[in-house]
Image 1 (cartoon, rainbow, N blue to C red):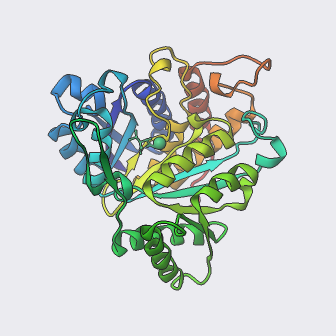
Image 2: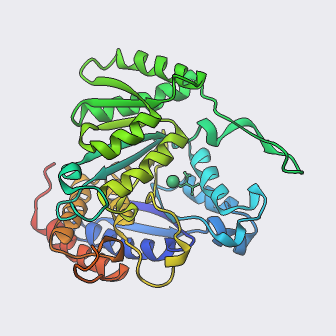
Image 3: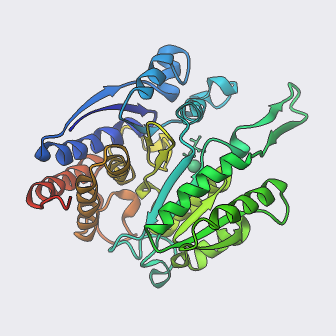
Length: 365
Ligand code: IPM
Ligand code: MN
């Protein structure tokens, strides 16, 4: 197979986790003779510095014609006071919108060995295996009207959804649930928000086409608590853009570290693959970041973007066995228990295992 992947390292720890994960990508692709051409472009704060805009036109056109897009992170405190169109985050929001990647899949699982890494009790979190389907191109992030007046006296944002926007992401979530444990929790705030009342109605309509999946509804505040009390009750969690942003960070704490979480943003065309964590400016350039969220995003790219399931699961198994073997980046070290390895070393350990697995196991299809 030949593929062209656009790589957008971005800001902060973005470039170093991307470099680390590209080593794992090579280890997964080379044994099977797959050729993956990498095409690097600027986004976020890095793009503002080089080109004066967070999403340069040539970055976007390269993404549109790629087989998949791999993104590190955007965000740079140097631009905290900049107007909205000159902030790094704008590059990310614009590319999501331009690629039409409305379904953001954010899996969160408790990897064996990490039961006592996070703040919650081990017996509460072990076995957690859920996936958020976060609507990504609508809702409060994009609704109009929006704005702030010059005197900072008032500001407005709008949460808006059309039936079509809810329907397509719900359909995606039901199909995903049908391939998993067939449970779907739709999260909203229908006791207060009309948008959530529409959301709930449309999700019910889509559910009628999927009688094999058990649907329930939860208010977002109750869901935040239920996630901490009993995360194992969840299989697929479908929710609005901002709610999904908030709940997925909470899931990071549940499974041990935000640095572990990957994501895939899918629509009708090219997919965008990026970790859930941000640019973590205080960690940047010190080789201390956890590359696993990025590496698992590569696995999601292999699966959903390049249709290389064998290689995707080899990466996930390599992550599992590396963690089970005790390797820990700084975010995963329990106080007083062992020492940390760096970003590059973690990625190298995983890549070595990937190479062995991909070459020694026969593809199942
Ligand atoms: C995420 C991030 C982004 C978001 C930011 C960087 C714009 O927090 O991917 O979760 O809010 O979607
Ligand atoms: Mn976020």
